[in-house]
Image 1 (cartoon, one colour):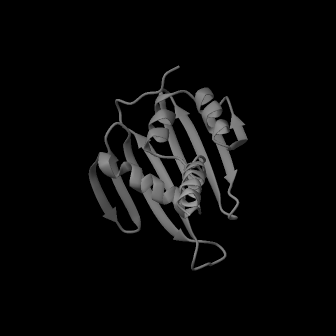
Image 2 (cartoon, helix red, strand yellow; image 1 turned 45 degrees about the horizontal axis):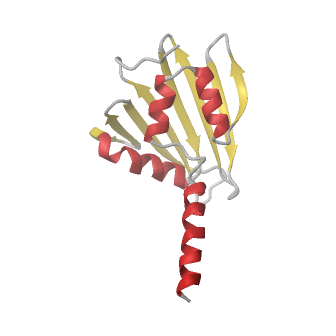
Length: 158
């Protein structure tokens, strides 16, 4: 019986780790805003996202990932000079929870204004999170819009 439990433990732990492979965390956000868009392409494609809109002239990218649960996540990136702005639009609660849990130890200041949660984060900048009801209405699903604005001293590498 003990051998079965130990075997199940070693099978279950890697599955839990792989389930968050596609989700974006604090370290991923830090990587995305401090590197150029071409490196972001490689990084997000390796995480399982697909590029569905790419405009090299304007310096914008859009990535999309469909989860097995029927939810999705879209990442929009825009390069403005040496700064990269990131927007994550998702209805996957685990993505929202992972971002909230991974930034909690780096918060310098947090403010709640209306329906928007604002966090000033060490080594990133400001993260704005708004939560809306899903269309069509579903009490179990919410739409999460997460905007990452880098600090003035954080620039991307070329």
